[in-house]
Length: 566
Image (cartoon, rainbow, N blue to C red; front, side, top):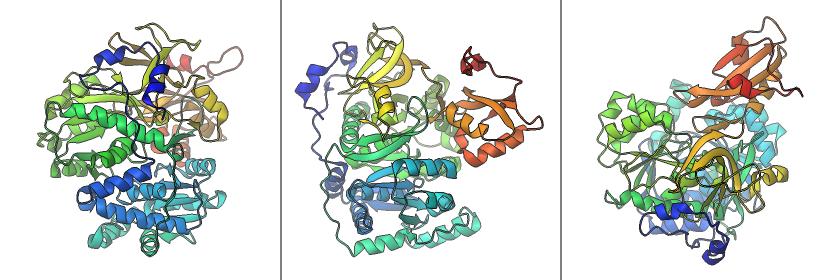
């Protein structure tokens, strides 16, 4: 990261948001004292050794225990012959093995590739091939998906974890219930795989080799649709993530203006750690703050989530509009004691004003929205956490972050005018993995990331999103691109043409609607749904299907999605 002086000289002259900063909030973050995320992990685990780091299913791991477990697994990974910079995929929900795997990969000098465990074989194969992952750590519940694609990838090492691996004596009971009672582990066979507990046992007998990791080295490949096209790996460096953690830590202090800051901050981690929002806000900020993260393996199980919420004095709760709404509709949740709740942080998708108003009425804690993308590590803007108002905007740029609203000529428009939201700062990725053309399209010559979101900036520096430049559909905080859906559906022999658009949805913000022109006149909606179910993860599947005789097209034959939306 450049020093403050050089950054200040390059800052755009139009920065009205600084006048809206609270007293004492710096315009720039200081240079990180940590050389890498591994360095941060080592220092903080020693500093907060006796504090609880993670709790999952009633089992708590202190920072000291986390450090020992991570170093053992990191030593095992090094022993496999993987080379510095090799990519290692992590495919699991929020269980204790997840942060262990992530930090171990970083400690060992490798690159983390986060994978949605609910991906279909087609989606998983693409991501593994594109990243060139040499190893994967997967929960056994999803090992059957890895089995179907492993031979066609560069995978050489497969570690399979079980739900109860780090839960002590009760882990055997948990595994029995998961496998036998609930039958959540489909049959799988991965010859040569290593069980997670075996890998730990081997690693404990080894010494972790110190790897010199630089701030500019790649830490994560975070896959996203970006602003156009198929899924791409956003290259996030150690410096990117250290910067965003520092930015968010500064901003978070505002939350304790009106309520005292507890000695140990408790986060409820219901959002998946494979998503960039939870990875940074829960995982990395938790490390910086010495915070206690309560991991929720299945946030869709609202009764279990409510039970965990009620069992801990939760201070900070990052979430999505859909999750807030589901909790508000749960009577036991509404009866909880929220006196310890300091911050509810909304991201991933717009928080609807009725949901925000109801949330504050029930909990006494207003929802504060932020905005970001995988390409920005992710947080670029946030509302002030010391003010009670729900602004309906995405807030102000964080320290060391510049935002310009630009027109098609890549020029900064006057305050109040509408244009594309463009972001520059130390949290912005250097580019997409092995995709120089897409990188050049996404990042301007002067270093601004073109988000594809259309918005305006108020005279106070508050930014409001009004539309999206591209055809991307936002489902519960996840990017869905029509191109991918259409490519899948077009491979069905009964389909002549198709087009996908986003439509408003009270639950998920937007949902996918599919228009189909039949090749086979007997093709049914049920057949298309079954076909999509096999090839697309749940949030990408069409919620509505409409058959047409033809699709609207331009004079050159391009399908006009805008006409389908009207």
